[in-house]
Image 1 (cartoon, rainbow, N blue to C red):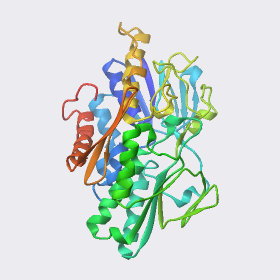
Image 2: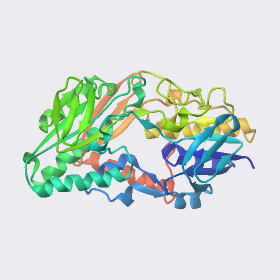
Image 3: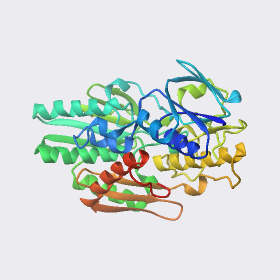
Length: 389
């Protein structure tokens, strides 16, 4: 039985391990965390809509269900030519190598002065504690939330969770009867955050900000973060008692000293079948890979899982264990999400032909809650999995 080494225990890595097992491979999944973190539902941890354990799927449970082997280790070096990865605890080599380690972050001075809902999982708990401190004080406070961009790769931006976190915080403070005591400001380095979703969505986001009395601070690069606010490139200062910020993605630091071909932003160059260029038998998926496509393209969980499933299929064909057609991720590119607000949501969709945002008061919130339940239970095979999901 041929062996595949999968690096990473997120959406891409877990999906790859599941489907490689279905293709009959022996699979070792290497991840430093003992759980798969469900980032899309982590927005509820800081506002007590979910417990931390609710957004974690133990890899020990997943390996029992699907038959892959989870090894807890942190990868520090990759030798793509030899299909080999070196960790702090050991070395791993197989007939094929799948890289799904996620991404690094664009660096900002003073990063210790903000927390990120897309950062380390523990940040969600720290955010909850910081919000608790401000709420307990029962005084006027200023909270700023936002996200940044990567000029070297437009797909490396993750703005949706920042919008969701701000709207959920507004709703949380409203429930507490404290919304009028807090000044909320949403900031972004680009002039029109959310533009990739299409003109209709951009207008609707603006309406949301005005309706909810959320201030805007757009179009200025960040100079540094300070304990009580953000300094921008023109030396203007946005005061903040607590700052949540999602820096743009950049290539994972481990890739820099490897023999992997990289884009200008540090992501792994792959073909449409997710195979690393000039490295036969090595695949890169999810946030680790450079994605070709239109300017509006974005790295999302469902694209990562498409790349994972396709890679499993393509590896099976390369290995000669099945006959069929290799699958490309290109025609699957779109943006799709349910942007939650705590008391409702908006359904967002974008492809080459259209882009729209559909408000879903009340029911939208429970739709996303339902997706979180489905994600956990379908991966554990407690319920049937819907085709393509």
